[in-house]
Length: 74
Image (tube, rainbow, N blue to C red; front, side):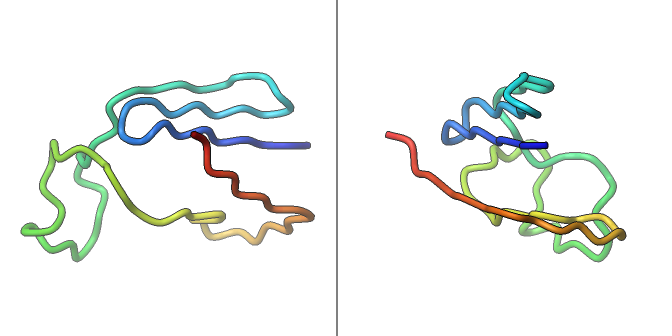
C-alpha cells in the first residue's frame, strides 16, 4: 500500500492511497474543540494553517513504515 499527501501551501490538500485520490480539501484552518490543554492565544479557531509539523502516526496504534520521502514542490 502507498499513501501520498500533497499540500499546496495554505490553499489545497490532497490525500491519495495507492495513487487514487481519497480526500481533498481547501483553505485548512484551526478549529474544533478536540485539542486538550491548548493555549487559546496560539490556537485561534479560524486561523489559516500556514505552517506546522508532519505527523506520521498520531493515533494510539503502532505503524511500520518501509520508505518515507518528502519532496518540496515548486
